[in-house]
Length: 102
Image (cartoon, rainbow, N blue to C red; front, top):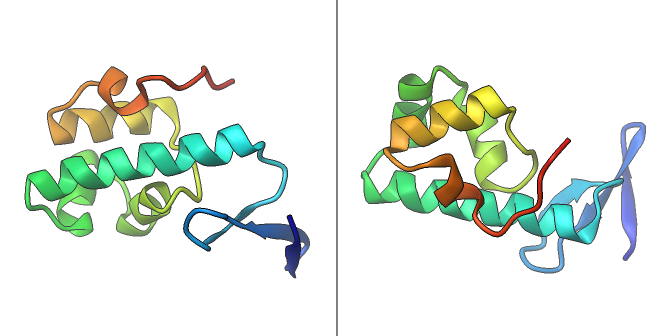
């Protein structure tokens, strides 16, 4: 997989969506980030909420939540709990089938 230089790091292009993702993540971690993002987005859309409304409900930035939805980053455990609570879903529902994170 070829990467493009971006600042001091290297970003790789996701084969699924074409979005750039940070180098250093395994293919499994990239897939899990994207899956989590899809699940968060689906739950948010089911409530007919914008990113801004979700951000207000879970005390996070809309930009940070957008990065989670796009699979660019994995939220911290406290943030993941706040996202799940705001969306009225369990953390287990958002992370089902994923391996643990350190």
